[in-house]
Length: 108
Length: 110
Image 1 (cartoon, rainbow over the protein chains, first blue to last red):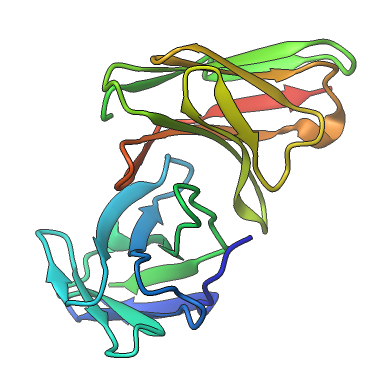
Image 2 (cartoon, each protein chain N blue to C red):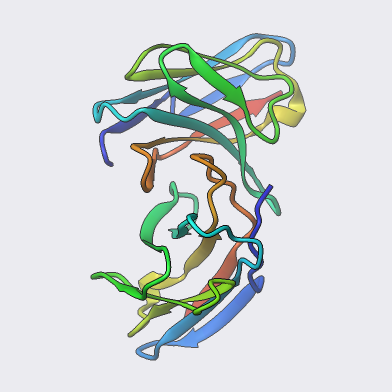
């Protein structure tokens, strides 16, 4: 079962930063946090992952709290194409369990 | 997409018939997964494999079996399809880091 908690939905104005929170309070010391998104009915797309340091790539930034119990995915300049369901995942071993994620709607 | 192909992409079958979905990868990744996705449930793990002939159950494995006789192929079989198995099925591959997903197979059991 998914071990993370996310808000079911969020809105963001186009061009603004989208900040998507995730709670993973039971995370163990050596487990990474992964973020994926799913646009419409396509297969999920990998975004970013991290252990305890903040991470940034061409798609997003990931901020992980010092106690590692929560994280925030940041899309710095949201576009309409970022409208999707975003999943925060804490793998169990090599098993990826998805919850219901956060449905992000970017508003023009 | 990351060298992963699912077949067929769409299938309609009758209740009680056997169905096999195929996932093929060209990345030589060790781990392969089968998920189903239904409205309101996100993706749920059915079975996964951590090597040739090494498989294990996920959270919704009842009614499904899998086989992995080669690194590149992971087969999902519904021995006797039921209407509750109407769903979109996704395959994923991983090398113990991030997982990459196929485009999905839409299965309708009538």
